[in-house]
Length: 70
Image (cartoon, rainbow, N blue to C red; front, top):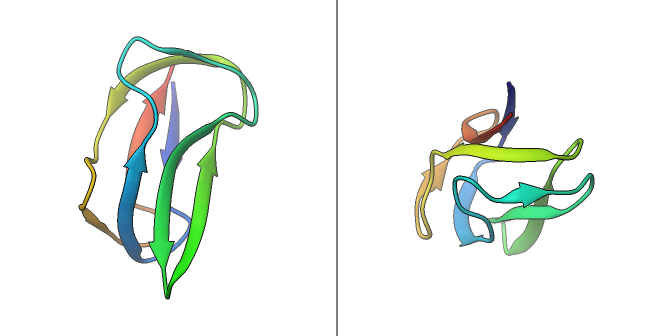
């Protein structure tokens, strides 16, 4: 299991995947806005989303887990 973490303090603009979705390496999973910059959070490897820990509009801190991959 791989935890995918927020790269910065910000607000979740989009959640692009759901639990159970198959993803490819480098696929965008979540978009976080920090200081008016949109930062895509991408999959480090192919896998299946096991859980999503955030929703649109959620405030996140740097290194908060946004989702997990199996």
